[in-house]
Image (cartoon, rainbow, N blue to C red; front, side):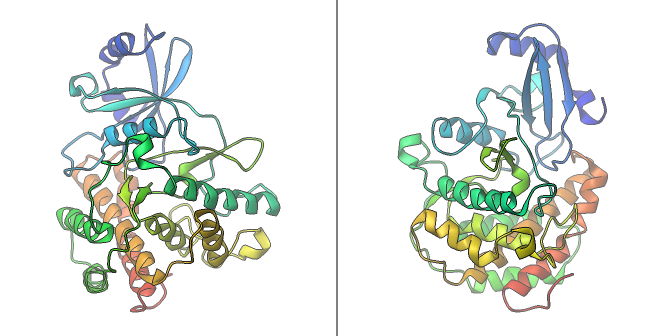
Length: 347
């Protein structure tokens, strides 16, 4: 076992589990699940059962970041709804157990796709998977907030005004160098902030194919994962983030669809995907979509800048990987300017 898993006190964890989770006693095994740059995730085996454990990273963290308690709360609230989520088991708010807050959830078996080109499936199944993504996203945005107890899950008011302010602060707090494209993008977003249209739903905050698990035997979604950035806000935030991501180059870092013959692969166009989503939502296609896409690029750049800062400070889940991802901040800023109509295409 390697990485920060070695820093975790298995004795304390075993004792806590025996006191808070029925049917678990004795020793525990932890193995890190790679790929995440945010909340470290582990597969936990105890008493012959497998679970998933999510905790905050080590070290000093930005205020409001890595809110595993919010992840736990929203997924617990969604249990029994049409939104596919893992079963929540227990939340530990006692930092003395593992050095930070963590939660335990049931392991969901399914297929994950890191590449939005979805290799090794037929064109028909690939199209069905994308249509399922549109349906599931609309399901998230259609949750009855009062019925599931999430009416207070985010503040009232203009979501984009709030988010632009929040992520600008987060970016400035983790800024390591001046990036002119980011400064220009922030200025454009501030000057073109849309009026509040009253749309307010649950938003996932990081909805993309690699945060979904699909049934092994078909295109149905088995679970939506990684709810760290979820809140109440504008549904087009999730939709635009997908479209923004698909405009990135292909490959393990960008995970985009730039230059891909989507028709040949069975992947719907951006317009077709948005239309399918809107059909499930019962709404018209969004106006001024370029603002939403530009904001999505800015937000991703701000997130990756935080990843880079944690890597430089030695607090990242994988510092070397964090520095690699941090190098993409200028590119996302340029993508945002392109979406706004202010810059040349990136890549």
